[in-house]
Amino acid sequence: MTDLQYHTVGEHRQRILTLVPHLPHQVLPLAKAIGYTLATDTAAGLDLPPWNNSAMDGFALRAKDTANATKDSPVQLAIIAELPAGTDADPKLGPGQAARIMTGAPIPTDADAIVPLEDVLGWDPGAPTAGTPPPDSVILDKPVEKGRYIRSRGDDLRLGDRVASAGEHLTPHRLSSLAAAGITEVQVRTKPRVAIVSTGSELKAPGEPLRRGQILDSNSLLLATLVDTSGGEVVLCDRVSDDPSELKSILESTRETVDVVVLTGGASVGAHDVARLVLSPHASGGVQLGESNHSDRALMDTAVRFDRLAMQPGKPQGFGLLPNGRPVWSLPGNPVSAWVSYLLFVEPGLLAMQGRSKPVADWQPVTAVESWDSPPHREQFVPARVVSATGEPLQVVPATDRGSGSHLAGRMARATGLARVAAATTKVSAGDNVLYRSLEN
Ligand SMILES: Nc1nc2c(c(=O)[nH]1)N[C@H]1C(S)=C(S)[C@@H](COP(=O)(O)OP(=O)(O)OC[C@H]3O[C@@H](n4cnc5c(N)ncnc54)[C@H](O)[C@@H]3O)O[C@H]1N2
Ligand code: MOO
Image 1 (cartoon, rainbow, N blue to C red):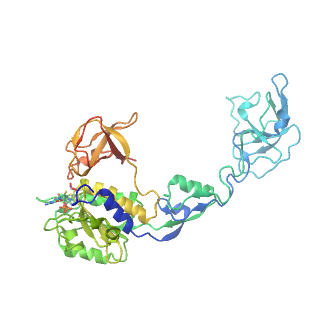
Image 2: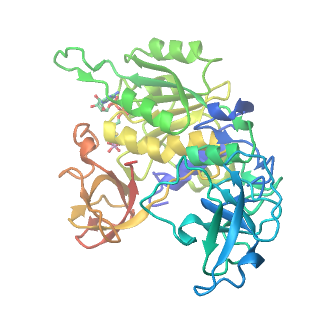
Image 3: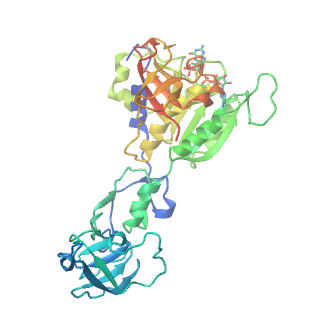
């Protein structure tokens, strides 16, 4: 705590992580599971590789046949078979015999080493081997080490080894490992179905003409695309005016069809702040906290609460559970505030609902190359821009020349990420270290 009137970022996030419900499991074919979160540890269904196979295009042989090979006294081996990848042939190799073999083809049971094409005498790098019949023989002028270029059955994974763990994000590389290990379907957490509602009588859809007093709604697109990157499914994205009946009606009509509601705007203390009026009609402007508010009981209090946070931007924050247990976030309407608030509070909440094992993003130390002021007793989150990507740590400047001005919807585009300044810091000087989260992928 920095001030009794304000919650810290950590306290607010802890309350969210305590209260959000976990989503149920579902079974999906692997090819449909991209972006989901694995719900159970998942084990290999076979040995990988499934059989000993060649790591090189070359010749499979018995190493002992080459033991005496020298430049002066080379060894000649007769080629008695051709083994392309995919063959199930297992030719018998007698003394002095070898098989031409391609990368990935199973090693004959009698062979114990591979010599790559390049290592046999007379190989011509300019003459392609594709489509040519196997030679009658090969000549070697040095011994081949037993086991050379053999990829052994199970040296990647054994049947039953864990391939991926519950809570891991099903990224392309993880899905690929699961496919290689013989998995065809996975248990995942269902995706949170999310309703996004931008509130404010001043909002118009992008592309519509504006009369005096109106602005274009940019938060809806911001939040819808962010929800997608957090593994959520946007099932409704709408705008309502400051008339409370419109927001009430959306909350009612989505009772059974959405798991999560994210609102922007109307979270502060204004006379028409509709999110607060609808979700927490009896709350006053800002909550006066005493020590007891930080007890476990307060953490477990599920009611929608509007708190003031010791952060800039993003001071007014609403969060709680609706009567049927759906979490609702009520984010401030200023676009930079909505962005920062989503990243700090909604993203970890949505990931926790999916059982994601790494629900909080990493912040890395970077060097500020310009000075700027930071408000006392509040953590500051500044849209920032990397100016030198070479060397460590990275060097950043504020993406706008007006600090974290939370209304600067247009200049947000200049940012490559967010810089984070500790609550105790009131001035960042050039050369100081700050934390940074990259938001470029
Ligand atoms: N007397 C006080 N006034 C304000 C306080 C305060 O503590 N006391 N806090 C200020 C801070 S900090 C913030 S942040 C804002 C948050 O206000 P609301 O959440 O009620 O948001 P609105 O008033 O509805 O909108 C704020 C601003 O953002 C624009 N906006 C809203 N929605 C969108 C959207 N979907 N797309 C683009 N821009 C949007 C809106 O037009 C306003 O300009 O309250 C301060 N006031
Ligand atoms: O805290 Mo507000 O979110 O500065 O703009």
